[in-house]
Length: 48
Image (tube, rainbow, N blue to C red):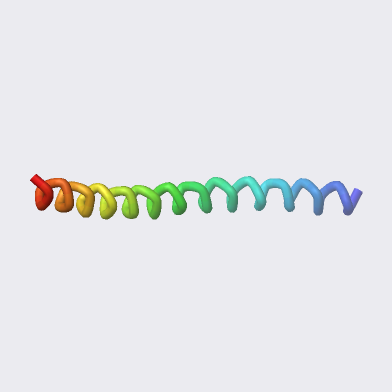
């Protein structure tokens, strides 16, 4: 019985952590993409 409760708690915390982690990761990726886009735009303008 005790083992089952522990397992359920672990699963729930893992799911919550995973959701939080992926959302933070996507935010960071968006920031990086924005920076890269700006650099690319600047490069393209300089070349033209």
